[in-house]
Length: 317
Image 1: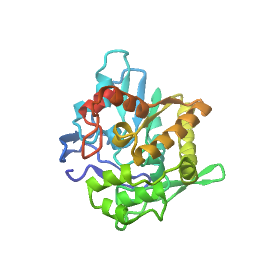
Image 2: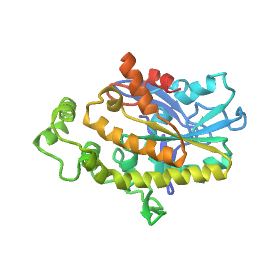
Image 3: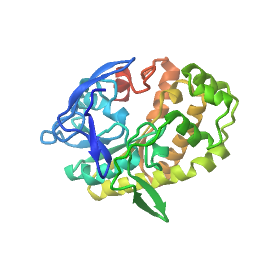
Image 4: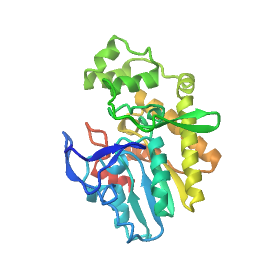
């Protein structure tokens, strides 16, 4: 990725640089990104020429559109649709978890007076990253919330600029899912090989039971519910509708028997149950993509990178 897309922010950890353009080259793609004068993906109408109602779309690199050009993101495709007449603005920032999305919503997005807020949650790591001062897949520090009774206590702010020491995203995700004492000889080998990682994930025989996931994931789920609940309350108070969109990774969609699919399925069910109990509007994009893949066998993710490919963005739209 050409340098300069993101810059330091003392409240959010990082944000997109305004009026930036550059290329992102990968095994799977060669894409070009542009940002607007406000510092967001330049795939959306200017806020002065929006069709109403208009919707603010918040999320991470899946919403931003890692791997696709400006004219290929699902936000751009939604805006090109003539029916119904409405607009969508992309406020996705690569690497953000739902805590940073909440802070961005409160600090800036709601001041633009959207008619609706679309709040993406990525099952792969968002709920775990919400609890961390450093995200699993980046060396940059971030703010995070801790539960203090029924209140959210904001911590790690102003956000320090010191990088995380020796990040190991795969190991940290494994520990979050399986517990701190999970690594075995096969596990350590898997960390060094994509092929072995796939074999480990499908055939290692580790039982990721519902009771284990419940005891391990409950703090992350409870924290997410508080964050999303506060985002909903803030949106409604400003006259905006609020919708949660649940998105999963490629393994959830294409290899439902895998261990990563199992933990994402558990998180998905918990979020959908909470949304139903709390009367929060929800779009189960994870389930829709899994069913569509089972029916048609088309892949909507880049093979190595794991983000949505152009066909995936069209399918999401």
